[in-house]
Image (cartoon, rainbow, N blue to C red; front, side, top):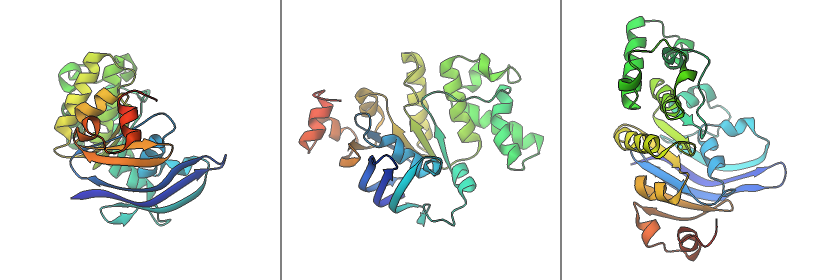
Length: 251
């Protein structure tokens, strides 16, 4: 079953750059969908469109539909704050609030009106467990989050999205600045999370894309060139442009 359906999506920025060109893409629920390709292909633009972060960019033209659970989120009537709770995003560089580890996780819930201490404590533990961070930080939740290592901060950023009970998790090169051990932890975490969440990932390498993808789409200069399940697109691509990129001829 598809969680997200993108129909005839076109986006153009004020400088004349056409970032996305007539994108049609079905993203299944409870799976990892990878969008990959060279820089400037439109991957980040697509991710930001899925939770309306493009509202903050200088977009001059946008057309088409992005349906999440059958509802077009590009409609002007969309409650963008509610959408961003449902569709959370983790960026390449970890973003931690100048609060304790616990405070980073409870801040969003408290802003949403949650005041019950038991509920907040449960949310903290559950999110940290899901992000594979609980065992490392459970005895220092009141310490500053900035004291964590880069890999831990990235998993905390993921935990913050999970604490808000998002249904869709968007990740824009979330392991690009991490060491191999931290990268492996994040990738293993994603494999467990896909049992409960819809994950859309722009990976930092072809190797990562091939390791984690249940479905993959290749983007080139704003065009969705090819979509295929699993590792097939990396081993038997149907389009010559995809094959050239996968084999390292450009990008």
